[in-house]
Image 1 (cartoon, rainbow, N blue to C red):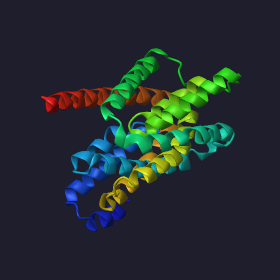
Image 2 (cartoon, rainbow, N blue to C red):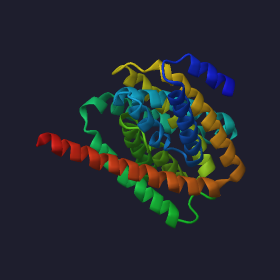
Image 3 (cartoon, helix red, strand yellow):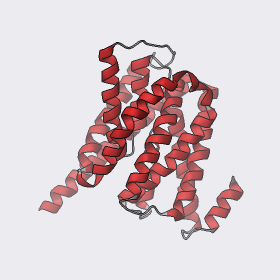
Image 4 (cartoon, helix red, strand yellow):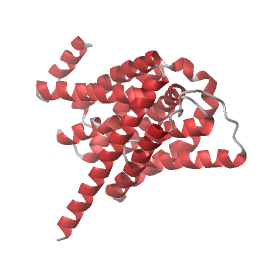
Length: 277
């Protein structure tokens, strides 16, 4: 991996230290994401923006990279998926239209409102996970009635819209929705999230967003390698340590993502007010 990283860095226009920094940020953020079920954008997306990549290009690059995260996580936990293929089809059939819609309207919506909503939801999820001591620690197979089925499909579509328009936190929402709806444990729910959201949702969103602005290929390779290796490592660690580690990491990542998005929303509102005056 170190040889591959060195080869990639030497072929890039970026300074060596910046390239190495981007790789390790990608690796670390995706490793945590693989354990918690989402939140890779907490570090990776801001790192791209701070390195000078415009928002839409950074978002598209991040989504392409998280496809590698989904592949890395799914490769390690593929055995957990075989019993939930039917649920995966539901997530794809009803979620992908939401992703397409969200990615198509991202140019025309105010990001600060989405950040605020998703930030508040993520913070509430963190507190819910903390106080619900048995959440996601055991796995079951809840049978859904028609009302619960419709509610699940509507929520998947709405989360898909958020996934297409902003990056951080939507994998966490799908993970917790699977746990609450079907009675899954964290490991099972996260495996399904990586397979559906990580690979198919993010790839679809990345393709649409790349049409808005070109994706900077000079750092995309670093992100893909960092995401894949980080995703595989995180999934391997969660498999070894079990649901208690995943639950703790999920709570921390939810809280961190929520606070980050909330602050980002407030700063955006302040800048908007300042520009008006």
